[in-house]
Image 1 (cartoon, rainbow, N blue to C red):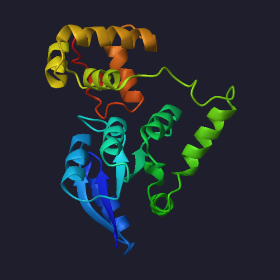
Image 2: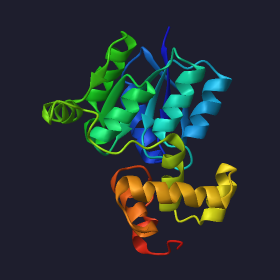
Image 3: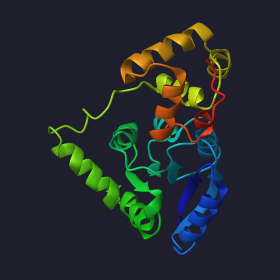
Length: 223
């Protein structure tokens, strides 16, 4: 039976390139494409899926939170993270969410094929760039987990929406929480990350890959 794969990335051209790559393998079948984490969850609920190639930074629900929710409902699905970054915190968060592999987009060629075969066999695969990052982190004071402040799922959601330019009221409406609660999360984020205003939060989210948009760097941020 073919391995049923979902490609999740908010860039259509990148998804098409991955589809063409996977078409080289008769044992692989791309059954669906998704542009957000919410779409991944909907696809997995509607049809059988064996593996998801999951972008980390997508609009709406990001890849880390989508992975956590996907595997809570469908623990048999393998997840391989895709990111433009080999950031150690991304690796930590994604592996903690249950992913079995991590590939940088710069290496998403034969490395991705190797990763899929490896994950299919029940093992974990990290591409060379990511493996080097993990090794460096392990050698840095002997701890991979001391790398950066830990954010909750809700804090990541609020941070991503701040970077997308939404006001506290708009974020509250999107997440179904009060605007005052959003403000509390924003203050907590500033304290945890040692940042001092919304612009700094937005820049942090973008540079860390939490948000896929760069509009925050061009102005127009809410106060």
